[in-house]
Amino acid sequence: MYTLKGKKTLITAMKEVLKSEGKYLPNMRNAAVLVPLSLRKELYITFIKRSENLQFHRGEIAFPGGLQEDNESPLETALREAWEELKIRREDVVVLGFLPSTKTLTTNIRIIPVVGLIPFNYPFKPNSNEIEEVLQIPVKKLYENVYEDFYGKYYLYKRYRIWGATARILTNLLNRLKKIINNSPHGYFI
Image 1: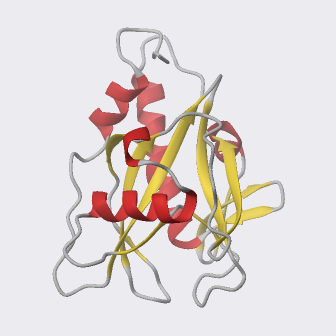
Image 2 (image 1 turned 30 degrees about the vertical axis):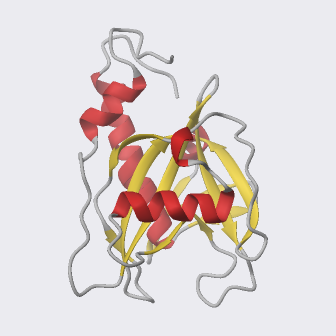
């Protein structure tokens, strides 16, 4: 288990800086995404590149997720979508907590991000109708490649641009990770 070079594990520290629950608001178009973290020698975040054949957000870098169905909770939505899109099994996700919700600007959907830990090199089986590519990006590369323009913050990694709602979710996560690093007495390398 990764530790913060002290008594806390990364899991414990993340749970302290994340919300313990996320709730949908009534009379809204609600959605949830899974923000999959993985540990190897450093911390990684898994993203998907959405298919160019989709009606909305085609070709964008995103987290696995989608719209609420029936009376699902945000956690149920995120885990269902992670299964449908990448075949991530519920039992393989250690749920760490929730980030603040964000809205998409073009489709007016309120997204609740669920942060979870999955094994590194997970045997993803992407749904080819929805996903073109799976990316596991080291967190330190995201800290090194953040930019801002008229529309807000965005991140670059190789030939990929992470922007919009995904960038806002990522910024919230990276700010919380920075708190963990800054509050660790012995430091923590990401």
